[in-house]
Length: 342
Image 1: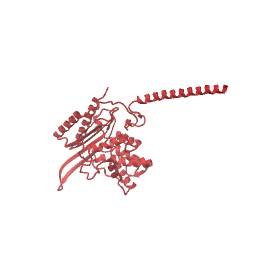
Image 2: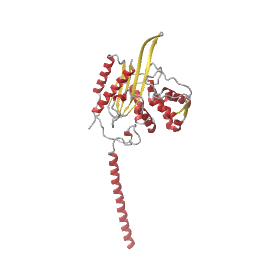
Image 3: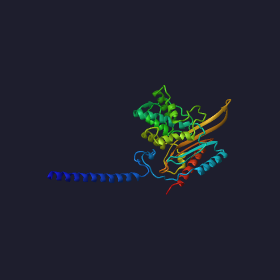
Image 4: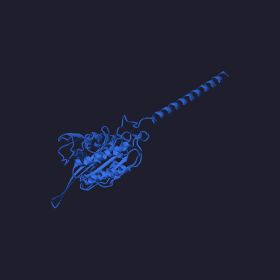
């Protein structure tokens, strides 16, 4: 009888103990859930700085999500005015709110010459291989003879030195930060050595849904198609998170500051890639005209609501085209900022 009573007391104690742990667990779970749901926008800001924070958390909109028809009309009017002044012969604009917001475009499917924009798919090809074998980035390549860089109005701040060896990781950085043609050429050559039977860059273009570049005097990219690369990087949906972050970080350090970045307040991060092409048209041995193309595309990190902007232009003067791109960027930023929800 005594043992039976002791067992009952023991069972009651165990039940109470289990109930205590259950209630304690529920309370702790509630507070953890409350804490996570009330974290600020960038849930892993201590590690990833350029990827889409929505990969880790959700939050309320910080700007009003309504159509950009008025802005589209204003930008279109501005471009027409610059065209009538002779400062611009053609242009294309593509905008996308990266937080599930509206999109607008002006001639966004018109094709322009890719120029140095092509370097981004090249690097994405290299880092796709590095996702499978990260030792690839430490492989060294000798810069044995000078590779002509062509006419670059916005020349690299740092150039490769003949006779020195560079890791692929370093060449990737120079290709994106300085838009170095020689560094890009070494990467292209290395890709052909890795797989001489298959055009790996072609495969990347195909997988990304881009038009494969052909004659450099003809258009091969649009603002809308090229912008898709930045969406893939921002959402880490083509490369690993680490290598997507790597590319956007390098683009955030890019030396070209005269385009999109010139149109936003100081301190606003911009991860962008620019491209330039100078063309002289010749017929029967005589010059029949001259035209430049200047493009700048990337992610503008408006606080807690990044957006994508791509501007491609044609005209006579690179500096004038850069100012036009900067002004479009300024107009877009001002509109986005005016929608901020207090």
